[in-house]
Image (cartoon, rainbow, N blue to C red; front, side, top):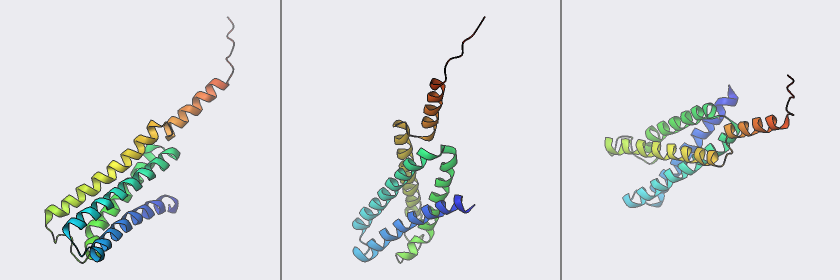
Length: 154
């Protein structure tokens, strides 16, 4: 059980740490300025998307989609919940301090960049023919070609 859930927890932790670093940069580096805050937040979402694209690329080469997609989804949801409910306290605010619109906008941005990153990584590995399914089909074809044809007598 540890082999399955430890990577999920580590990924969720890494995604949350990226958010914490962005919040601390906004709090101490830019004194909570709106324009700087938007730029750092956008950079944070881009880093999360690129990280998830790289993870999807690497994991899709070794395991089938059905095996790893649920684990990545759980890690993203845990990191999203931590980002939404714990993250604001790190930057000296509260989850609903800026209103429900900003709260839900952050959820949609996080979900969009996360899903986009995973989709980009998976589509790239599939387009290159390096995913688990393509590799197993390639091995199957090689095994079939390696066998000599049977002679059929009538």
